[in-house]
Amino acid sequence: MDIQEVYKIVDELNGLIVDQTEEGSSFLMGSMFTLITNGDVIGVNFLDNQIWNSDDDEREFFENQNDWEPLKPFLIQEANQIINLIKKIEL
Image (tube, rainbow, N blue to C red):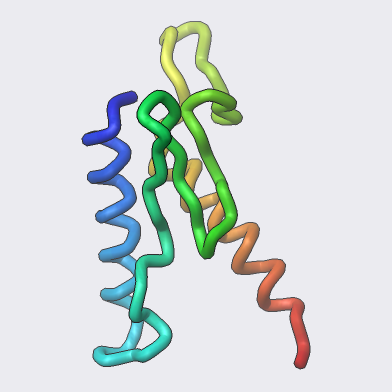
C-alpha cells in the first residue's frame, strides 16, 4: 500500500468525524487520524495512538485472494476500540 492510498483513507476518516460533529467544535481543532512516516514505514495514529503501520501489519491476510483485509474498515475497528476505552473513563 502506498502513502497516497493511506493518505486518502485517513482524510476520508477525518471527514467522517467532522461530518458527525457540530460545526465549530473546538474539540476538533486537529485531526483525529494522522498519517506518519519515516520514509520507509507508513503508519496511522488515532488520538496519538498508533493503530496501524506498514512494517507490522496486523490486518488479516486472505490467502485465497492473496490480499490483505481492507485498511479503512480495519482502522475504524481499531479507532472504535480506543473510543470504547475512553468511554470508560470517569473524571
